[in-house]
Length: 202
Image (spheres, rainbow, N blue to C red):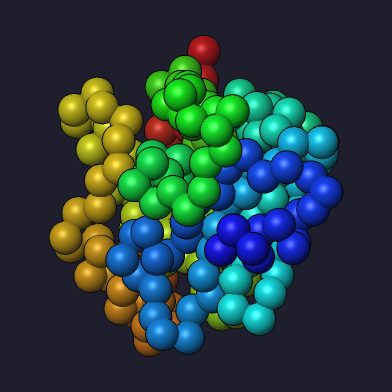
């Protein structure tokens, strides 16, 4: 992996690389692409770099910091998936020596502070996809998001959580792409997100 990272991102210095996406949630399949988040120095934007079987979601260090603070100038597409950071330490592929001692701080996001911001981005992202649901594969993530949020509301802890029931539903949807079957439940989850967002309004 080190050789591939050097090849893809040289002359920029790779600071961090960790697995993300369906594989860390136990929902990947044999034919699934492998997803990675990469943070590099000497770059101030974002990109998706693709190889034959991998997608590298690539951020400059300053852009990654902006993401962590839910900067309005950052793309919704990337802000939606920031909860990947909750499992980043368990899925590290590479960490540069310069940040090794500060990896917890480097990955930390104050989700409680930015909860409303995250909800807003989820609603924006999934609202469009529910309207075009027949061709949308990512809707299974709504089951995962609901689990995490309900756990947070019940315990006060913003941490990775995926209920067994929702995991099985997400797996069924991702494997079989039987969206029509799941649509009523997905719309119910979306309405729940909207209601929470309204509650968070001042």
